[in-house]
Amino acid sequence: MSKNKWSHLNDFRPDDSGKYVYQGDILHYSGGARRTLFPLWTGMVSSFALVLWCGFLPDTLIGSHIAAIAGYVTTIIASCVSVYKLFELTLRGDEVPSYIHARTLRKLPGLYMTAAVALAESIAASAILLIMGDQGIEIQNEAATIVIRSIAAAINVFLFLRSRSIHLSE
Image (cartoon, rainbow, N blue to C red; front, side):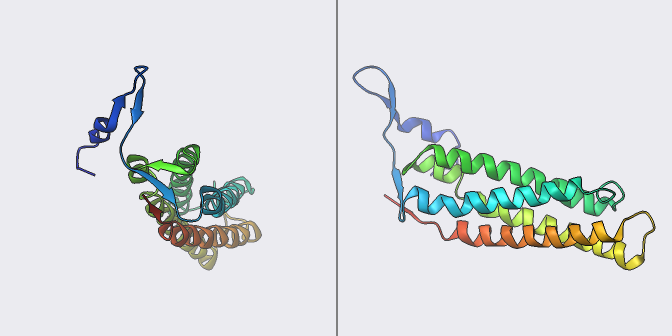
């Protein structure tokens, strides 16, 4: 694919009825779309739910250090973008145009790793708060969020590895 982000529009040509049809490269999942995308969907939904759950535990997010909050917000944003990219990829079914592959599947591993690193940074900030014995936090809730965010970070690392192993062929 060329560096021009609009070059894929050259692959659309009118058919006999005048509708524009994509005539560029069509890629197919080697294991089928459902089998390939199901682990990504289940992992993404569970990770997103765990991270959201951490935000609703009482006296954890509001009393946290700015680094913990920044990691949490970065994870939420990366997760939302990942869900959008997965949704866009899922709508295509088994046949994926090459420009959609470049826009979605190539960017998913980076999004998952961004979420995992942001969660690790958030966990480190919360752990430092616990070690320092900050009086403004609830120890049980903060420890619970550290465990939950650790699980979500591990899921994001799994998603990173899984999304890198997806192969599409013509």
